[in-house]
Length: 258
Image (cartoon, rainbow, N blue to C red; front, side):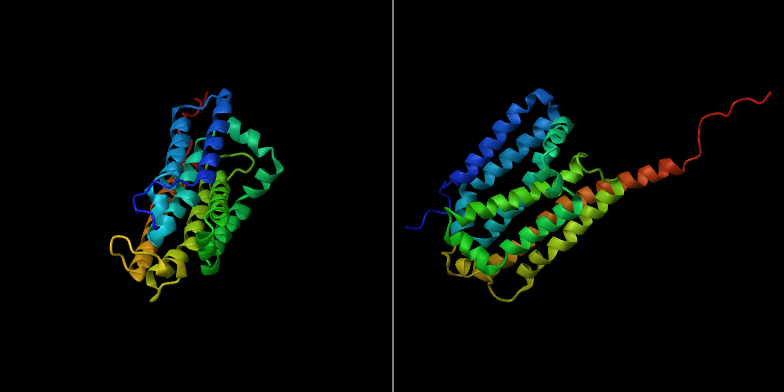
């Protein structure tokens, strides 16, 4: 029997992983995270639970591509950004000593990995396979999005093991948006449904498959634009401020001549 669109059908493997991450963060409390760190990390945990342990999960896996795309954006972009921003510099430096972390968070590697994960899981065969195997392939998809997102955001919010200038961060974020945006645009503009699973899925809210797909593309592009352009503008303005300070003449009074 098809579950109700409002059914609470949590993904237990993903929820267990979220709780383990929260417990790990609790063990890092000797690093003394401030209120902003706690708020950021807590916000990331709340977002993960909001898309994995609520009816959003049911809508995403049983009914609507648009719900699934929102879930993916949270898993690959919004939640990872908050989780990484929630780490204290001391905790991040400790994790950065791990060889895998140092490799995967290197900016070119992190960006390439994130784009590759996004593209690979949006291939129709992979997308449909994940939905048809919700206890095996789907958790793998979710893990890939989250880990790739953490790698992507690490050099933006942490200075170890790699340090980027404000200008480099602005360019990095602009590049991420440019490389990922074609997926959302394709979904919004293509003239027929791409994913067989959602074409055959029962309709929710009387949303036809093609209209659902177009809405998914719009939501994905809009959500990415909000995050990436806001942070791009922040780091670009910081870069301009740094350049302005560097070009100002020394304001200190000169020593009197005698």
